[in-house]
Image 1 (spheres, rainbow, N blue to C red):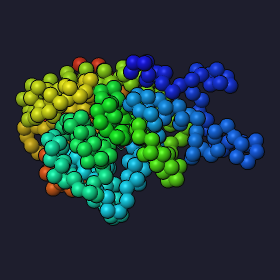
Image 2: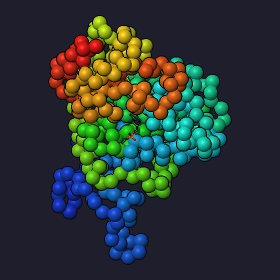
Image 3: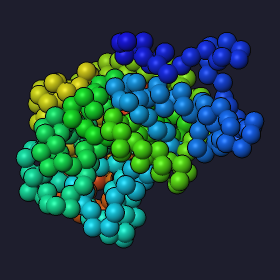
Image 4: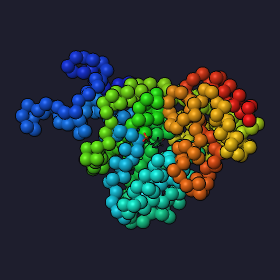
Length: 381
Ligand SMILES: *Cc1c(COP(=O)(O)O)cnc(C)c1O
């Protein structure tokens, strides 16, 4: 099946008892057994839920994976995956990471004896300098957040394979519409389903998808043992959102390209971070690796003051000032005080993240309205 057919049909079967075309919300905590241990495959709703099963199968299918697991949040998924590690293990991660991921690495897992290295992976070769016999994971986000750098998954995958290291790709920004990391050599894909996959800013959820059977068994065990599972209502909403993923992603990308071009020409704008520009340092990798350049853009102003950047954000009317991304509505955010506030200033600066950087999640509204909104917000500073 092609991608646009899978978003609508993968994993979904009419309900066998009624023929309902949409997956029912199985709002139950437990399942009746005919005799102890004799049941229909469902024992207790932390362990299995039919609504969740369908969503897990759909997400696995979209990523060309054999196994899918859903979690109550993206951080719940990341936390569960990190629990396959043990004290002494080391992780090499991109230095331009989602703030919450940086926080769980450094504030939660470091104290359990796991070591994290943060490096710029635009040149993947340098990863090898940090590999030793304790290296268990390489952790990649691409496009990175919020600087929209692109990392060559295939190249990192070759290094991971050579040293027998698990390669994790957080595919939240790109979504499987733009890239399927498992096909490029990743071992595991993690998602904040909260963002594009659900797409309507009404669900918080996470997912892990993978092909490796042994690791999948560990994740299934941890999902049930640690319990960060999503509720059936949220699984239903995520399934509903998924059905339009391909249409939404196309519209996000089309609008983002126009907004990026507008910003690039604007006299008050210093720099636009957008992988679709030929001038972007990793444009060629993006062109090869991704179906489109996505819906995220960051930019800085010539007047490099945080106060001015904040005034622009306050002036915007259609772009709502809010955390998160990937919904149908356009959002603007200030990474330094919002999504990335948990990363120390010196670490942010090392990664090239200026305090005056503005991040846009370009929605699927009429793009002329989005551009007019940016125009008036910039004119007023
Ligand atoms: C939002 C986000 C997360 C965390 O997901 P939640 O659903 O908010 O817990 C992880 N990675 C990336 C890239 C994100 O944008």
